[in-house]
Amino acid sequence: MRARRTAGVVTGVLSAGAVAAAVTIFNLPDAEEAAGSAPGTPANTVEVARQTLIDREDHDGTLAHGDTTTIWARGGGTVTGLPAEGSTITRGGAAFRLDDKPVTLLYGSIPAYRRLSAGVRGADVEQFEQNLWALGYRGFTVDRGYSRSTAAAVEHWQDDLGRAETGSVDPGQIVYAPGAARVESLSTQVGAVVGPGAAVEKVTGTAPRATVLLDASAGRLARQGAAVRVTLPGGTAVPGKIVKVATVVAEGDDGRASVTRFRVTIRFGSAVESAGTAVVTVAFTAGRRPDVLAVPVPALLALAEGGYGVQVVDAGATRILAVETGLFADGKVEITGSGLRPGTRVAMPS
Image (cartoon, rainbow, N blue to C red; front, side):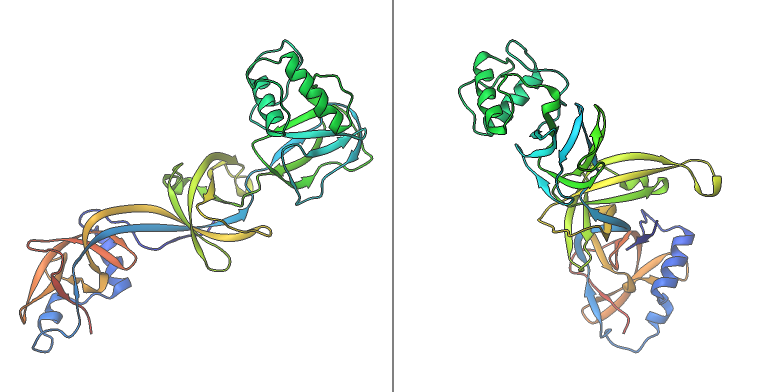
């Protein structure tokens, strides 16, 4: 798993290790060098700005269509029809055909688990009636009760499907999915004789999703509802949101102890096209500091007595002002110091 930091999170005064890293990475000048430079106002200056700093940590992910769900046969018979891999099945379409009769896809979260007929009541009845109504069948009230009017509408539906007009619905005649389903792969083939409980196909949602497998050390980033930024294969960056976090326990490499990771699923905030599986880069927010004073990191000076300062330029004169640093992000650093305010000009290296 490859992780990259776009900036390091530092809160308050930097630790000795962070100071050394900052000096090494940005090659900060010291205050004596700044004071001993050519006379006159520094040619390069920048204003202290009030802004929100966001520290992001990048991890590689996969662009696909999210987790797969298996569609099972509830009855036995010969498989006489299967959808093509990569195709989409919508409400009312055939998930597959058994003995030349369609097993119809409907939308919902409650699986078909019992026979529905006149007199039956429950949330599964209401879910079924919502689908029947959405398919254009009328003459009944959508509620928790399966009435004779519902049975009459079901007979019309069964006639259109080429099924026997019984007015009741066996669980083997329908299958539920959260919405339109994309066929990821087939688990059987036309001509196979299957029994109840046989796997028929694996499906996903139709909208592309990004998934990232985070090590336990990066688990703090796996916050459901958190905003992320996803860079697609073409280089376009799009916003996303973490919609699912699952804990995955896998056997360690070379017989080592089991390893816990976090599988993060990301939904996009705008339309994204995906022709297949691809690698993406996901930028997680590791730290955020709103409404702080910030300058470019190269504006920092290493003070002889330790810590940091900036060279303030005011009315043609300069002075060294000690500052405390906070969050480093996107090449800028949060600073606090006596008299600092938005618009204060500080020197930058030539």
